[in-house]
Image 1 (tube, each protein chain N blue to C red):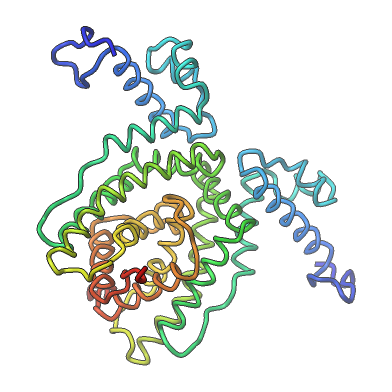
Image 2: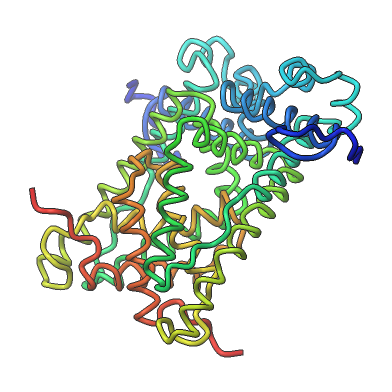
Length: 206
Length: 206
């Protein structure tokens, strides 16, 4: 990284390489949002990002390579877990964050586009799984804290609990088309806590 | 429908029109499963189905028109709701049916393909929403029966309960990539029942 290239006041710190990546990923996200993944074209991404085509082809090679890097960036940008002091508070914060993202017009379309892209390409599917793995692992800390506080039974499966919170929101985005709002988010969090308390997410003993 | 065209012993009853439709939808499903939706070609569907191209173009017009009709057929073929006598039994039957479908290699790929297609085309998205509407309405009867039996509180939102049962399975198929099996299905049903009993799915009074 060319560190002497950093200028004071730049929105995103880093050298030229980091700035090029930010511009290219922003342009890729915009094009995915506008037209879906099937028409993502590297030359058009380069033009939109005001970056040389050769740079884009050399670094990302294919549309799927670009989507995979976008997912890495989305994982890096994703917010740290909440720490409200209660499991319901933490899971509600998680559900509201997911609901806000998926109901945002740009972000909702972007998630639909990358999920659709993953159905057509195995490397994109692997990148998508890594994105959700980062998110689920980051927020699993909330369930570990709840176990430590005595709010959740020992051996509660944190990943399953976090999946249960997000799942109804994704089901609306991708399947039923039912609206996504804070009422639905809060209910998803409460339902997960009900099931945690009932011991339904306790894993079988080894 | 040309009823005199029915031959004894045919697998699917109906006239020539119905048989053509069955062959075309089967070929469309096979091609979607093999290659995803982005490469669905009506001429290739016609060849695979051993049906005239003109017939296919005249009746379905576009790949998205064909996918929409496939979703109508999938809704028509979908199984009636269970009636086991308990909410947990009915929701477990629903979850296992969804898990069996989504974990089946052909069916899982078909669902991923039509969901991906829906992200790129509004008429396909509308057809997908109608498919889930048929499914959710059919199985909502189980929640109404549970309310009548006193197993679920009055004003429990049946559609939200059924969505909660399916959602963790779709989240695995489309997002996290975590495996889908009967253990996960049974847990999704149990978690929904825990939340129903806690009153979390009760709708606000009008």
